[in-house]
Amino acid sequence: MSNDDKITPMLYKLKSKAAGDLILLEPQGKQLLTLIGKQPEAQGIIAPEEMLDAIEALRQAIAKQEADQAQAVADAKAQAQPAPRFEAIGLRQRCKPFIDMLERCHKAGQPIVWGVP
Image (cartoon, rainbow, N blue to C red; front, side, top):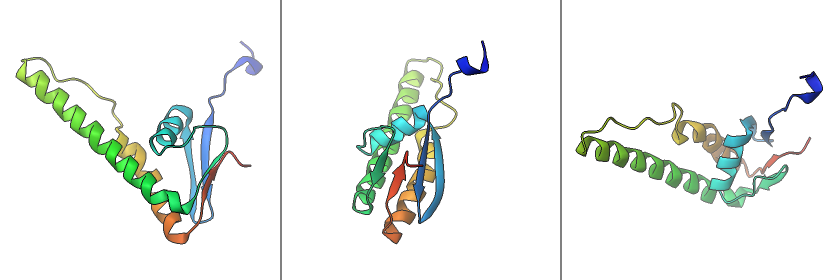
């Protein structure tokens, strides 16, 4: 396989004047953008007036994931089964930098854009 044949994963680079850039690999970028109701396309914008709803959507998704995992552990324990294994990095950890960026940009009244050079 030559260097030309290598597949480069897509990155999402979220930028704003009010915060440092946030770079996400394609799967995580798609997941987080979808959770806040955005189409994970090559370009997009999150307006300041959308940010509080986006933060709330992420927090709800975190709470749901954690509740689902706790229930799965409880169910396994009740059935004398081994506890299920989950990804080492959960949604709470993945969302933290994004939530921080959303909060900072909302406070400054600055949009977040991605896919714009």
